Amino acid sequence: MFHFTIKRRTPCVLFVMGLILRAGSAWGFNSPDYFPLTQGITWTYTTSTVTVSGTQDVNGVQTTVLQSTDGRKTWNTSDATSGIRLHQQFVPNVQGVNLTLTFSPPIVLATGSANVGDSVISPGTATAVFTPGGTALFAYTATFNVTGMPDVTVPAGTFANVVQLDGTIHLNGGTTTGGVPISPQDLFSTSYLALNIGAVKLSASASFGATTAELIASNILLPATLTNISTRARVQTGANVMIGGFIIGGDTPKTVLVRAIGPSLAAFGVPGALANPSLQLFSGQTPIAENDDWQVTDLVCQAIGCGGPADIAATGSAPSHPLEAAILITLNPGPYTAIVSGVGGTTGVGLVEVYEVP
Image (cartoon, rainbow, N blue to C red; front, side, top):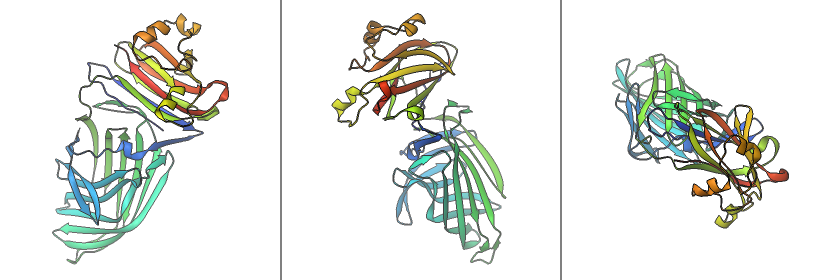
């Protein structure tokens, strides 16, 4: 699944787009895109504020440190090769002691290229440092499941098709170097990750407590003017066409230009570009507009007030190839779906885009 979540901070307006590549019932996505670790990012939740505060070596790996105002810290990596991984975790005041857990090998929350339904099991050894209390080694087994891509509403807004990760970390019991017996523990968590934003909602529980946090604000949701969001994928046939979903929120209509690009991609060195894309637009299950070649007016679309070729050209964002498709339309708030397919059952690499038109 390819998915974009864009929040435009204008009063009462939320514009969210989810671009979905479907292959049967499997939804695929690049998990690091849902867990950004750029230095300086902050997320303000209902419980605390989390900041990407720097980097630190953990067991020979350069990790990124996430520091929370409630004293918690995690050491993570997020990349296409290894996916999302948890290397170390610090939790203050666990029944009167501070706890640092270092996982070897690190726990894999999601592989770099993942699908809904995936399950990742990570066995290993956790070094637990209790202050006070000493040190202990525990065998652990971590299981993380990609259980869905729901829409989630939190104080920061509504985010479409977020990745839901449900995890369990089981720690075997043992005894610390200070002679303190430690009973087995199960740590449960659910995280909802939005593309290019990270966690918009988290919940965690264990024998020593439970917490739920929802995103209120983030400096990667700064005021911005939305101009274009897009993604590229291979367009096939049947259930494997490209499906793009977007939601227009608020209480006023918005004018958008939806484009399906194919042949012009060849000029950018893209091999196997879709030769002749066709575009359909749905409201729920109801088709409301379609277009094959953007310079040819579609009568159905024209009947509901779509812009014609001259109007599309006037936006300054008309496709550069006559066989590419475009729909210029004003839409009421609500969810919409764009489907890109190849004319005559052809296949190839295509690009689906949505422009906001002032």
